Length: 505
Image 1 (cartoon, rainbow, N blue to C red):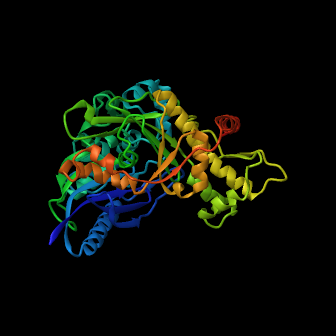
Image 2: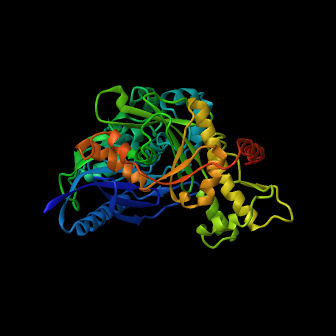
Image 3: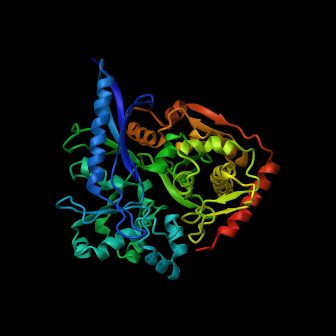
């Protein structure tokens, strides 16, 4: 029997674990997914059971391999490598001897360390941390989560000082479990989301570790995003498969979208939106609420092997549509919003600022709150639905404008992925507001595909990034159809509404 070359991507997300087997052309052969429990012990706390994360990820990996094996009935499935992509910033600390977590994982959404972050800001550390890490002081990132676990779990700090504990983001945890406890490492993209990593010298920062009172012994080894890191040595999977790629979910999506050249931009439309711009071998300027992050490092000593990105976040996007369904009850299913919004030709002056949990880039205002303004007696559910889609598109237009200003680069197209790309009206609104085409790829599993590409590159499934770029295929394109004057006028009204929503809480 001939061999079917394949790469297994593990896509560990906030609400579910997924596994996808890709062939040598970057096409999915098999997909498996399983949700896991979300824990909310107190207000603003969000936790996961790290063991459940591992068990669900292992199960879907087994399921995907079984499916792909059955489909390749006339071939022998040859899984050449495993790539990992993951929810970022989520923090796990475990006992090196037993391999057991000392507490539930603290999820990236968790806000329990807000007071610690306030103290750091009041201590005048914002500029230092931004300069070293490219990040703004926020509970979002891992550093204050680690500190919280060491300070609040009985005996944890003493154990850490003795070198008995290990910290990892979810990629590190999966790598540790996959290798049977042999490898404790993280890649540069995930390390750059901890608020402990110097993105300039690509090392853990001694000054920041002292500030956070975190012993260096708990930290994982830093590795490239593409390169053999270890081999499978766990129960339930074939032994000896190279684990050869790791990247945080948004960086993996940037790579999977083929945004390998400076100035290329992708935007993911999900519950929120994450936009990343490749800035090449140097960090971008983290201004206007943007973050500067490591995109990836390909295995090798050359400095150009490391690529950076500017990143911006829209906190509420698809979640606003969910609110129309669950909060207002004006739609029964999220898919209905497009037809309802299209039932009117304009919002008739209604503007919806969906700042339910504050505003992200460029405002970065945690005190902003959601607002619908411009209502009249003639306003109805169609106007509100259309204003909701416009609110998503306005936020992303602001974000892209911030990136253009910070980078000095004019993007020629925006590559898009995520569930929101199924809404043609939203995509057309977006193209109209930003004035450049939106392009959707043929393979929409861009996050998992990016992890597969990074792993496959390391073992020779693909020769280089150029081969991957050439294999990228377009499925749909939306062209701007609105004059720039009209778009500017609409954006000006939007900014007036945003100013009224800011500083409310």
